[in-house]
Length: 319
Image (cartoon, one colour):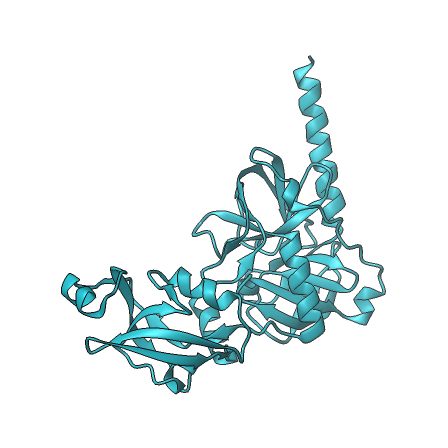
């Protein structure tokens, strides 16, 4: 086996993959100092990461070669860290090429992949090389929103690379890369999630997600005497430390200091438990909450509401 020849062939193949996908990668000017990357996902539509699109207006893209065009923000989804932009008619008339989308379910640990981004289109696309280091099934982000497949990368996501593409050796794109969820680890939002969010934002302009309007500390233990008195099996609950004004929780009569024991009959021992319950519900639906207040049990019904824009913006500032 000619190792040198094999390496040369692989090198050429990877270079060809970057060249192919770079036609569909743009630089987006939507935040101070450093542009972010975006992908032409379908005709006239660009996707990027929510946490790097810091403005709602006056957003421009830079195409390969340096041409600049205005784009319109269609909508954003903090839960999946995706933002969708619409290309101006002038730019769309240039027959910009959408990427060839691959099925992320086919990715395996050890697959060679490329992260392709663009922060200066005059200089062209940039790439980093690595492997897929972990794959798993559906998971929920810290906001409780489901992403169809967990994909973590052993490759660098440089400054400005969030919003760029995960690419295989054939130039197929398997999703959008982000640094928002992994605490320093590069993750990929799979193509199936991207397409779902794109379709919803193009149709509705937003993704309505329910919220309670409460914040909690880590689980607190319940004493054995209290558990015996109230005939409780669970050993801990979530103490509520903040109730947002005019939130569903406040309207239901929940107070700071209440301990949340169960939501819809499910024991609440971690914030993820709440996210799981809310993830399957729509604004306007009701959930029953079992609370501990002053050593006594209390049950309230909370009518869920759509998370307000001010709350979404506060989360963006934290990011």
